[in-house]
Every structure is written in structure tokens, then in C-alpha cells.
Length: 118
Image (cartoon, rainbow, N blue to C red):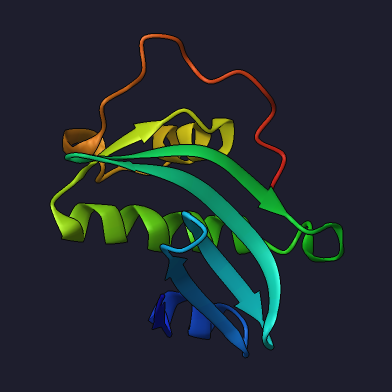
């Protein structure tokens, strides 16, 4: 497991850390040591396939999923892999934020579901 103190996360809220947890195949965002948001992925040759993002109810509405999405997507790009957004939240984030277009392989079927992890 690799832990990062993301400058975006630190400026967003004190006590926020972001982690890529390869053991559990997910990115994690912790608030004061408590797991608040996860984004699960499948690590495939040349790709990271995002499959699910979830925010614990007590952390909803704070914009923490955006912080984790930014961290996770930047991490994938930095690793030289491509992004496959099967997760509705990650897909919605990619559509709203420029800069990832060249690094995304959109799935044949668009993700279904509400991106309600704000």
C-alpha cells in the first residue's frame, strides 16, 4: 500500500489523505484516519478499470469523492496506464473535467447509475 498526502486534499480539508491500496484494489480517501471514500478498480495490463466509487454516508456532500477521483485519475496517468470508466461517478467526473481525454478508453456500453457520491 502506498500512501500520499495529496496537496489538493490537504488544502481542501485538514486531515485528508489519499491512498492507492493495491491489496484491496481500490483508491481510498481518509479523513482524520477514518475511511471516507473508496474507488474500486481492476488493474489490467495497460489499463485501470474503475468499477465503483462509494462515499460513507456521514461524509456525503463534502466533495470528498471529487478529491479522490482527481487523485486516482492523476495516479493512473502518471503510471502510464489508461483509464476505463465503468464506474458512473468516475465517468461523470471525466466528462466534467478536462485534461484526461487522451488517457481514457470509454467502454462500449456507458456506465449506468447515478453518480451520487459528491
